[in-house]
Length: 324
Length: 295
Image: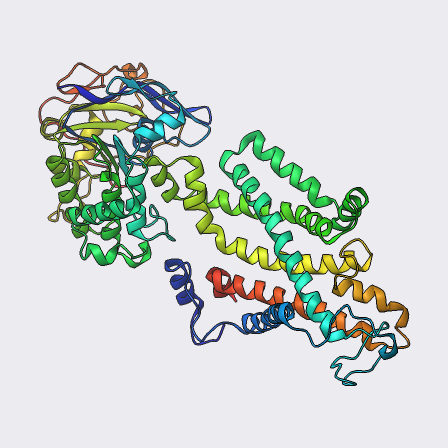
């Protein structure tokens, strides 16, 4: 089992503010890993950095390697050759991630022709096959449709078809279901899972939806304030969280039976970029924080790694929130 | 917009369909614009094969005939040439100047603006400040300059007008292109491994074609106006090639004797420019539903 895509000490700096701080992330061949955390915890930036897609003015340092090939600092031309071919990405907003003035068949065919020396006819045939593979209804007819003629779920299927176009090893899905209806979410997740398994791809699934990770990924990494605060096997991390933040996330999941008013939110909000406290980034929202937490905890060794001075033992939960 | 369809509904429709058309046929300005422009194009095309008289044939004995005399529908000028024929042949010149000048401006301005939008940084600054400089320089002055260096001719006028309108295209391409470059599908295209150039050509240009087409139509009108002005000053089309601007210059000494002589070319210029302007406005309404929904 070797790492296909690996980040070491990844730091992303936005306008002089460190948004991702020393993230180590290893995607083993054929594994499915979830990356979770609240909005603003640096998940998407991590993903973009690993694809070499950071916007101008945002710098990444450290190391990102695809099969021991360093991606940071690679020439844009060489990156273009890898992206879409070996590394693919599915985005959050299927509404806006497709070009509104291009037929979807052409968009999928273009994704193929970028990396494969095939003529337009063969590319279109392959595109239609891909649209069939992602279970788009009436793929032959939809080839000529424009994005606005499809529903959100259908567009996301097209996005997935584009990501699959060249048979990549690694697929990074950045909140692929967040913008969709719950029933459609389940379909898209099932599709992703099916494809990842059938094609033996490596998946990095970014989301703030814990049940999505629980249903899809065998490994999970929890991110907060630009750092990995806990990681391990999904069943262990969700079943017996060691970091108070993970505990908070797990407790915050409502199920259909949760009575109104019984939601357990993590107190406070995610501070803005650059407003995280020193030491442990979670200490100002943590019920277990002590003076010790002014020092930065390091991530313990695997299998279930966590970065906390006061890890949770047993079935401890956060104290019930005080009524405001 | 009529009271029946609420602006909210129109906005919602517009957001979903970028090229949604308004119901009830094209707006009036498009109809009038297309008619006027179509008429000019028709005159120009017909003049290639047929004009009532030879527009350069001088018959001094028939000079300054009033309209509808001896087969001259619009009369004759001071040298006895048929005015309708000159106007028809002149339409050819005007359209040619418009097409070439706008093409020069577009083919120079759009890539420059695109470069500025895609690259940003100092390169964008150089391009945009350069275009500001060019923009501040009067088009007529540039034509006089070029005319002095290369000699006054239709070609010089076309090149001068083309250069003068290049900044306009550079600016709108940069502004509209920068906006498109922020959109998610550009990131998605990059994630598929699309190069910068391919992103601009295949993803950005089709999305900003509407504004460029509108701008081209409006620039066409301005180019025709500029050509007329240059020819009037003797810096554009040279005799014997017919040109509306030069017709005006030729007949101005006959203004009291035969005022109609200056009316005809003036009317031709005014109606053509009006036609292209109306067409440009109308196209903007049709192609940019956000704007029309706000009316």
